[in-house]
Length: 200
Image (tube, rainbow, N blue to C red):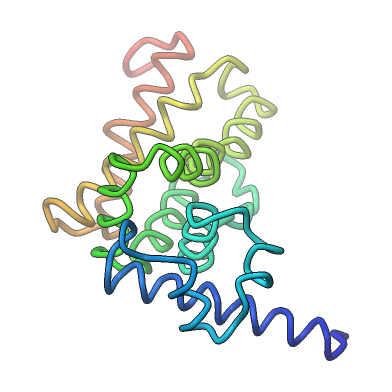
């Protein structure tokens, strides 16, 4: 059970991260200041700096909180195809919960702020690359895939497809699309990398 100090600390952190997102959306990353965040959250800058090293770190923490970063590991369904589908559904659901303007604004700011870009890549992009690790580890244990599958390629391909549909083309990301992505793209790619012949 949480004590009062822990509960107050969590509430304060939630208020600070909420203020960060509000200001990021309202004024953009470049114009957002630590003073403004402290004022909006009714917190001291000393409190903020005890938790985060700077603005970039705070923005990433806030976006992670908003997006529910850190997908739960899916239960093993027993085969690669079903495992891929489960992971893609979790990725899609996390992506569609995010505000499009906020995420696109963050991507734009990354081009102009090296510190932000480094932090986002380290804390968010790498997490996406690791999303398929349990899937590929289980497939290897079942003898479906070799150990040296290119995990980065798989994660980048899936992230790009989902991002494009969410924020560029507006096409549906329904279960039918995910099944087509798995059956027509991912499974043939993984089988090719595993050395199987088409249809084999």
